[in-house]
Image (cartoon, rainbow, N blue to C red; front, side, top):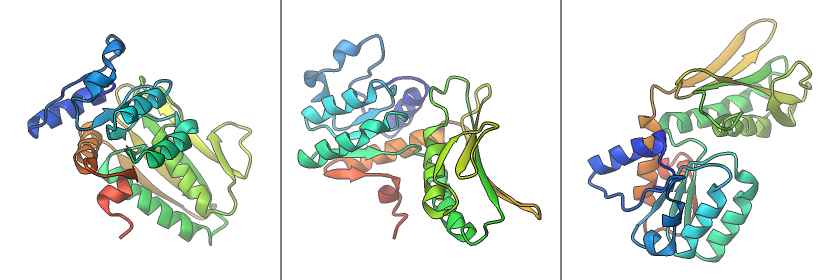
Length: 237
């Protein structure tokens, strides 16, 4: 486990329950333990750290040929470098902005709905996400995935941004709220003068995210390449 916050602890609990062993737990207090000798003891690394450390953590794992399952968001400006290195050196890398099975089914519904709504230009689309007050990035990685999938299908939108009074007509507005210990809620709104339509996913806790990450860790062992939840869940079949 690289990153041992609330999510890391939840994943650990499920892993132990499934008969797995956690051979290394990295926090801000023992970064010196993140070294080749310790990494070689593991079969797979689950990386839920911080945006400013994710890239270096992943590369350290690659140096010893350790598969990586990563759920850290807001570091994706370096994603292409990770993919290139992974493929060139025949490593294994699994990334998801959200490991919840329900959220990934929601992603597929969102794509389908966006394709349908591209034929209905009278609807204005927006995204709302709600997370706990300790969430580091805004908008969330999940909201960014949702927005990017919408933009890919809707001709009227070119980019996304956090909602402001000056949000351009061609910009998909995302509202990001931070409330108490909310594990994660995402809503896509389509609104017109006639009616409104929305799809929503609301997590009830961290278990769904942790379960998906553990499934990915079990699945990626002995594989080579770059993968995501669509591969694990066979959503494109």
